[in-house]
Length: 236
Image 1 (cartoon, rainbow, N blue to C red):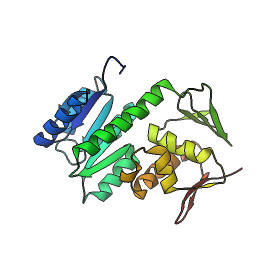
Image 2: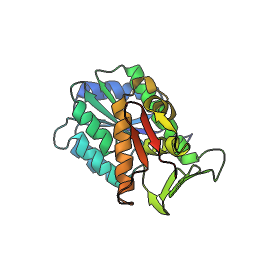
Image 3: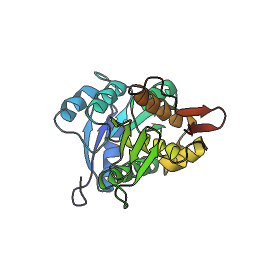
Image 4: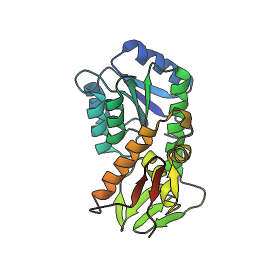
């Protein structure tokens, strides 16, 4: 994806009308679009070439969105993934975030809201690819090192593979060890459209960050839960 080549958005949903409507709206915004009717069809295409962003339904025939998300995260931690889910699928929605989705949108949704979410995810992707204006900027908190110029996280020298959302959340915590960050503060740091994000979204991403760091450091406990308030990165 470059300034001359618009981002490629893949829409994976078994509802033909939804696919057509979303594809039309995003096409008008200048994105290139490809659509798939089920997870298996999409996986076959993604195995050859990944898009720049995926909009993914949860309940689909042949391969559901949760399994497709798992497989995609095996190929790339940086690929932005936006889940679509019905209002009564809260468990699946949270599970999707824990598997590695960056965001979710409940059906029915407004096209304006979807377009805003896509815009934000592409903005994060652009930051990831270009890096901040100050090269070499580093956040160090104990064994954790966050290289903001490359969006790279390391624990005791070992690379931690994080999604863009996870990296932004961890940076917000690690910048101020010992200080409690409310979920609202973390939302504001991570999501430009924070009004749409729930506490459960933040909790799910924190759970995933802990799991990844625990895989490297047994008994990892640097991220503390302050019940009723938010989270704190432990001061050493």
